[in-house]
Image (cartoon, rainbow, N blue to C red; front, side, top):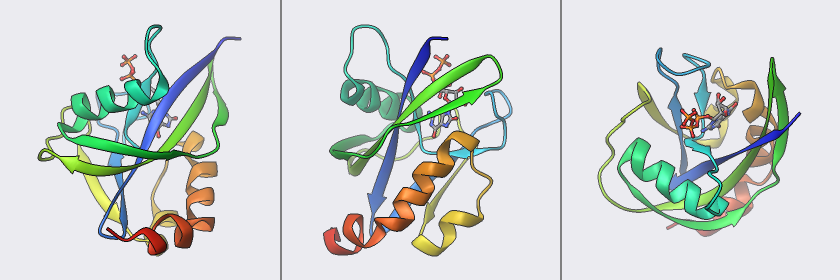
Length: 138
Ligand SMILES: Nc1nc2c([nH]c(=O)n2[C@@H]2O[C@H](COP(=O)(O)OP(=O)(O)OP(=O)(O)O)[C@@H](O)[C@H]2O)c(=O)[nH]1
C-alpha cells in the first residue's frame, strides 16, 4: 500500500508545545494532533508544513529540525508522520479547521486523547524535552 507522507509541527513558544484538536468535520474527530497535513506532489516536507500551518492556523513558523518519522496504519491507509520542531515567528492564531488549541508543558503531554499515529512522537518529545525546550528557551 502507498504510504501517505504527512507533516506535522511541534510549535514551541515560551517552553510549551502546541496541540490542536480535530473538529467534527475532519477524520478522527475529537483527537488531538500536531497541526500539519499531507505533502503534495510538487513540494518539500518543509514547504508543505509552512503552507499547512498558514492555512490551518494563520501563523508563520520557522522550522528548526526534523524528528524521527513514524509510520502508522489506519484502516485503509498508512501514513508517514514527519514531525518538525518549529517556532512561531509571526501572525495571530485563527483556527480554520480545528476546534481547539492548547499549549502543553511536558507533564501535560501524556494526558491528551492523541491521534494514535502521534503517540511515538509524543514519547520522543517527552524524552527529548530538555534538549528541545528547556535548553532553547526563546
Ligand atoms: N496533520 C496531522 N495529521 C495527522 C496527525 N496524526 C494523524 O494520524 N494524522 C492523520 O494524517 C492525515 C492527514 O490529513 P489532514 O486532513 O490533516 O491533511 P490535509 O489537510 O492535507 O488533507 P486533505 O487535503 O485530504 O483534507 C489524516 O488522516 C489525519 O488523521 C497529526 O499529528 N497531524
